[in-house]
Length: 363
Ligand SMILES: O=C(O)C(=O)C[C@]1(C(=O)O)C=C[C@@H](O)C=C1
Image (tube, rainbow, N blue to C red; front, top):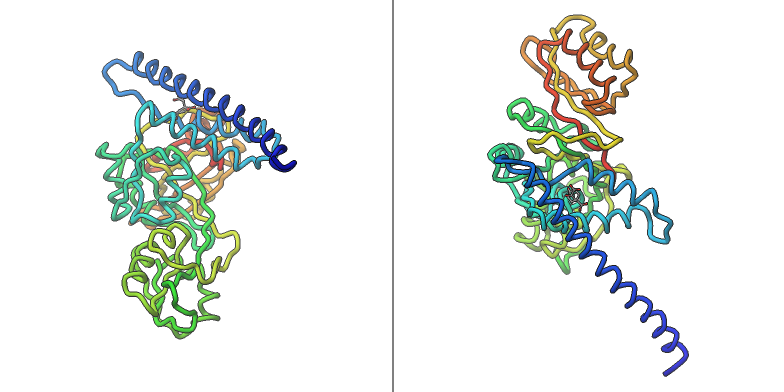
């Protein structure tokens, strides 16, 4: 045995011992999660228990990142614990999570980032179908896009909150890296047509204007669909989409990261019908309609200022006679300052709907 082999053998023996310990600990943790499930069931009576606890998951992940001493990066080690919790939760009850399909979209990536790989991810044809699937109970939760850092708010999602009686249970942010995808063997000069979702075309507009000003661009329902079409039509057809879609349809990422803003990202919301307790670092979202009078926005926002509640987003929605606002702010519905601010808001409003309090994104 060479010196190198001897040294490797010693280190690999250590790794085998550690793996054995990790393995035992993982199963011990899993058994604990099973006991947690039994306790949840025991005290629930006839109502079916809520197994998924976003506030607890956020606390676990934050604690992981806080105590991490490396060499694993905080986010990497949290990602591992994310998967550990995902398998533990699947032992309690396998989660069904609806997302805006088809497979390979950034929404699916968001679903995986938030729930891990042990949840069952169900692709839906439209945002409305995601809401419907959750409202009917066919899916436990849904994942919907709410805003992109380059293109702004997804107004269709906001409008659906008016129509459905669902709660926001969480948020997740996904960096959006777009690539120009070609069929194997195709060249950059042979492109005749580029498929993508309208948002992705907009997010890489400058790059496209410089490189392919005269090539036909076709907006389709999602960038995974764009990849599917480019693969189906073959030679000369390209797509703009992400890594997942490239893998799924076996396309080459000929030019990577063509998004105009380097920090392009999309925020997604987790929808469900459960109350989420405080995690220690939370956000609340509301829909509020106020009379369409001069100074309405000023009056509306004043209580937030008075009670020192920080706003993270204010969106105006068109409504017939009244002004409708979607507002995100820091804090949980159970915080006294938030309750005071909400009570004052109700006084000046025609309708106020609290869409939910939920943990701020951890990963
Ligand atoms: O603490 C709980 O309530 C659990 O069910 C355990 C656990 C975990 O694995 O840590 C699993 C699922 C929940 O979403 C939160 C945490």
